[in-house]
Length: 54
Image (cartoon, rainbow, N blue to C red; front, side):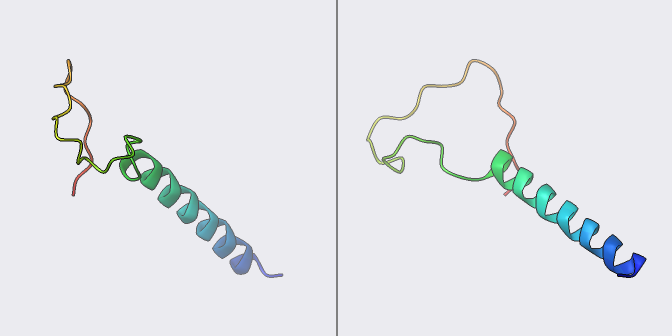
């Protein structure tokens, strides 16, 4: 196996890990289960939260 194929594999693995970390931090379900349709707004946070760009 040549060095360039090994390097390409490591770069691909790194890209997949970075993408999964980004999706875990910025995406996904917040866990409320009702899709935000409960009728009552969520309480205001005490501190500003880190938000991901749309």
